Length: 162
Image (cartoon, rainbow, N blue to C red):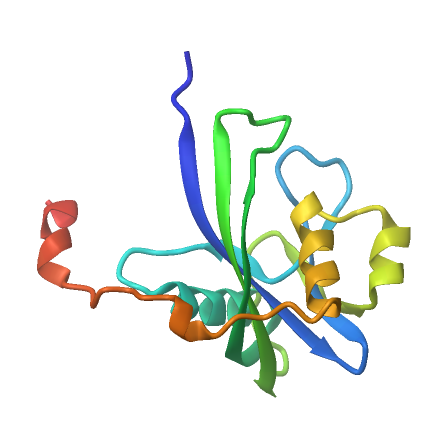
């Protein structure tokens, strides 16, 4: 029996002139490339907002400022029933772009699309990709003050280095 594994992830929804920033990427379990928001796992020692900013830069070359919490979403992929993703999704805006940025492995590139184009592609990585755009277009947003993250103490993770 395989152990159930929770994954804490972040995603960033960035809108500009009716188009949204997506990442075209190769992903486990898919034959073709898929589209996702800039997203990834939270790393040890970082806040979820820091993770969202980092992942957006690593996957798109775009520096962003996080403005609001869009929502907290969960997803258990049918092909991996032993995994559940807890996705903290943020609304952000671009502050600058690194030209010729070295993007994460597996990333084809950054793409700007509207919701119709994403739906027509039929290549959203998960239902959460579409849901986040629908929620953003519906005007959903919550203050970042909803999130409390206790300050990180490196001494709490010293056993991880052993």
